[in-house]
Length: 380
Image (cartoon, rainbow, N blue to C red; front, side, top):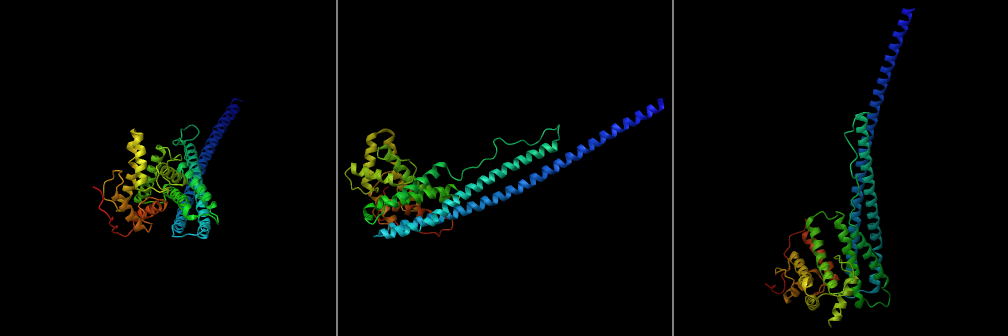
């Protein structure tokens, strides 16, 4: 009996050990399968990220192309407005030609944003798959070597919220300006207000264009900033003097023109909405009268004109913020070169021409050129 019991006990022990071995082997097999599945997931997510990146790159290129076409269309529209005697029909026909490029630009922007968000989602899924793989490799009792990053991947906006909002504002102002054109509209009288809306929209899109990475050459980005510096300084000075209540953003629009007109009216000057020597002197005098920081800042507007002309090769005098007869002559020389009426005053047409000329002068593939010589010797 003892022999049978011992034999049965031995067989039971062997069975228990065998079962434990089978369970252990099964667990190893399941663990190995889990790791392989996790690796497959990581590989799949890596491919998804690569695909999403390609989609985003393509969408960005399409947005840049559509934006450039729209900016070019706005530029052509401005040329129509700057003709000697544009008619209401000219304005309406040219305005209708903007509709297609505008829709393409906005659609391109939306597609680029969607593609960027899809890329971020794919990147997040890859991170989660990598964390799951690390956990599978560590096993139930191990510590994963990879943890979820903090914070998780997020999308960097293609452009700042301020720039996007300024584009929307400029677009709305432009629509209002177009709607105001009727058969009875005296275009000659309303040209500066109307031009300013066109230039504001073009400059707003140029800033968006640059922030979105469409301008890859540093000099071209600096050129856009240089032109905007003039309007920024002007808006700041007008605001300090109590004439401008809009956003100081470096983009000239109807509010900027209205502020200039109010300044001119208050000082008994011809109401043109453009800044010439007399207007600049009146603004500077008001700021000096305010004293303190305002007096110091009053030189910034004219200094920005000097700096822009220097960049274009039309001014080799000091950047000191003092508007002289020599500076007026330099502005006129530059306007003549640009095909803009040489008034010596900075208007919407000149601002737009400034930007185009400087961008061309600083383009990497631009042919070397010798700028025209100012008609007067710059002040020393």
